[in-house]
Image (cartoon, rainbow, N blue to C red):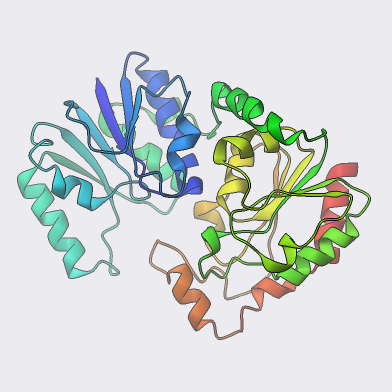
Length: 339
């Protein structure tokens, strides 16, 4: 059985696809799994050297596939349109979310796909994103008792990350801080930059490593003796090695905290603005701080506003981003480190 899975998505969503891959290989060890994605948000890189993956493509391959698993957070409708004739004899499992929020355009696309191609539509349920992804495998005869629920990163990928990160010459047992979220785009999931700086001052007796891609002005200027500032200096494979040597990772609902959770590392996530029940990080040693606020979640791809729209139209001036102050976060960090 030859399977193609698109991963046109961000790092966090790509990590929540890992259980699908692990489950397929558990139930069908001889299955060949290829991935395709544009690597816009570095999703391809977390699968390089993964022994469960045969190939990772950027351009659509000429090869024939028995199955295409088209997940809501990974698939690209353009891929099917552009390659509709190549997929003529491929069974397509397409995750869809047909409800009152669907546009007429989306309904028309689903109708066309159903008419031309061999498509099995899988309705998205009110479950966590990773479990919804796994439910698509029922079409392949996989029972729920065989689902691999934890999105664990491949040991081979972790080892490659350890080797790659050695160039930074970091000591062990530091705290990683990840102030960035949503690649710098507008989102209600942010935490004020001044809060991060106050937290760093509270953590002055610890070694701190700061990670991210965006150039946060105030954070980029920090260069104290206990701080290693790696903002805009790392690749995804470097991040994996850097996270692996940390004693704790602290961040927002971002790809990096999904990554550290998928490595079963101690992780503290400051979580608000989107659906905790559907998109939270999954990891044995992951803890969360959630503000108690009635208007959350305000953004979700399951029918609520987009993150940008939630940010722009918030009637409460993003109150959720200010409820948890630096002292509260510092207290939780101390509890984790000393517990």
